[in-house]
Length: 250
Image 1 (cartoon, helix red, strand yellow):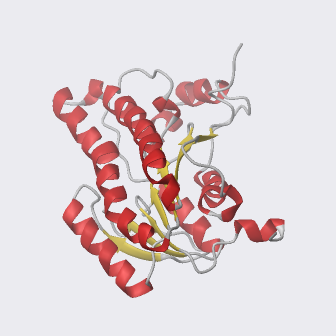
Image 2 (spheres, rainbow, N blue to C red):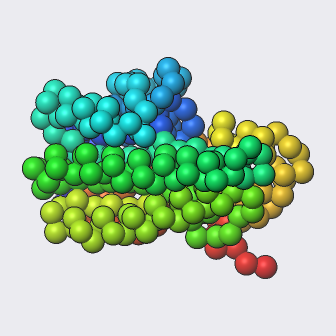
């Protein structure tokens, strides 16, 4: 058996992380790189990487399935393998601020659910070749709990959680594990408006057991666990990183 610390190493592995220009995706990409993986971080905008560890950044809109598929093929041809996919790209378009709520709903599902389906399907054939793979889908506590004013986001994340279980069942015997990484309220650009409002910031902090918001780099350890041999018998499950929000009662 490997030493306990070696179980979390990703040396020789190749990872793709979507939504890597900022926030949770950026923190996860940096975390996987720190564990030894060769990481390709994807995002629509120019990179805004941290200073500690570099990863290979590529500009790509995940809703463009043809462009994503082409990039995946290029990565495989250059590296000879793809072991890890982290689907962290996502958008939020609250219904109460949208000019056209129906359009906002469709756009949200296109990015947060349909694009993830396409990204998984693009990567799976390359994982199947090696008989190994870890797919990590970043969902939300909104996938299991009711939140107001943003039905597209809640529906997309709930659908993504179910999609993960479906893929986990379909590909488990091929050596491919699929899991959900479930953040609570984390201080990112997406949650900036809530965090900047003292009332909403404190209300959300009070819903957790730890009494505070999370930081993006607090998702990195959980992602390393799910990507690494440390979680070799873990698939089709939800790993909550929410400060105890979902578990808190009275």
